[in-house]
Image (tube, rainbow, N blue to C red):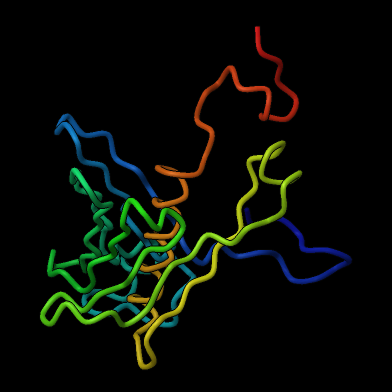
Length: 171
């Protein structure tokens, strides 16, 4: 974060910040997506000096519990639903991106098979995302936030006693 890049390259600058707020609501989870200060060319509205010091809230991705499907709503900073992301229980590695007005599938998030050894002995995952053309940068960032939430909820090994966590031992 902000340190020098490899071999004298320019310092790295964060381009996206994700935050998972704690909630008391059962059977729901979310991630908030921010554009860090300095990562955008100009604020969308308001005082430019104040905006230069603050992260810009892009929106949130909300997971909602459902019995026979995996459901996410992608919402902008005004809490308007931009996309639905849905995964069925019989296609566990594919999540369709849908237009909320028509229900039409306009893209997809897919977990890609990494090979037996990598899948069994590491917690590393590869995802592919197909987005519709013409999306704004903020909409792309929100869909990327959806990928991170999907990975955390369905594919990460969140057990602190797991032997798959490098440098840690069950005990």
